[in-house]
Length: 97
Image (cartoon, rainbow, N blue to C red):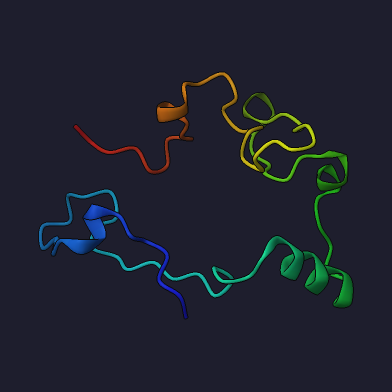
């Protein structure tokens, strides 16, 4: 299973659990799948999915943080679209100062 957390926090032993990852190693069994692999699996196995995907919303979050993308835009371009490129984050993975 592919490791997906390559953050600095994951590389350091965190005995006191103060880092955002709390010493967890994160795995994603789909990390090596392409976008096409995912949609092929969805179609082949008749998996339900959010209809917003059909309206050019490849990455879906809360209503104010999500917009449709245009052809050629990065799949994540519709998320936190008003933020600077270096500040785009939902708050789940914010580093504590």
